[in-house]
Image 1 (cartoon, rainbow, N blue to C red):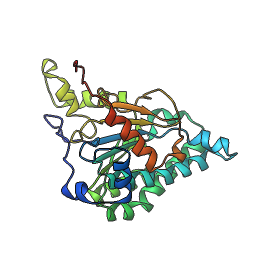
Image 2: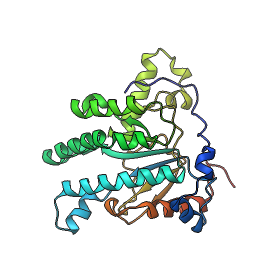
Image 3: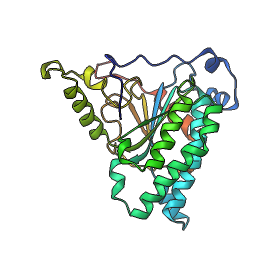
Image 4: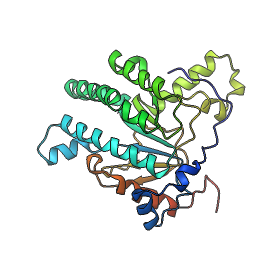
Length: 266
């Protein structure tokens, strides 16, 4: 996906006074859990796992599990926005997911397209800025156009930035970044970590501070592997369809109890 190279990774946005001062039930609940609203993770990434297991447990088809997961995503996005998190990135469809049964893949593509269209008004109303990450030239045209419309419609919004990772692979993103650098004529001896970061799909976004994975799996699954070098990983046994705002708060609480070292000794 075309990007505008940046010389440096950005400094995360500071939450606005509105985010800091507005009292809402969710923020009150956060305070009761001991969460500091002035030390929230700026960027939260989520590996939404367990839709199929949730459906199987209830005797339902996998696509019904994905549909339930879509409902969960709406609630979590609004909760993250209300809490004051500035960036939320979710793993909607990996580059490896094409290996799944054709019926499931087609259903997922249609579900993401429908969600992108149907939820746009709600996201725009809530000042959400939509972005995507992944190789968009390989997804169905209808889905690509729906995502592009969402990006264009919300580009001037100033609330939470919501990124859908679709047909995304962390290794592929690094390969695409290197190809972009080579195409721009940068001498090999001048290629640095900063120049690679500047050619990623969304170079203007800060690296994730917190990675949440649902359904108990202890794997990174090729998600944001360059950007997540120093982020905190929180794994919950809760499947994605069962994940709610309170689970988000619990993950943030765990994050705030940790000491981030960034490779140094503290």
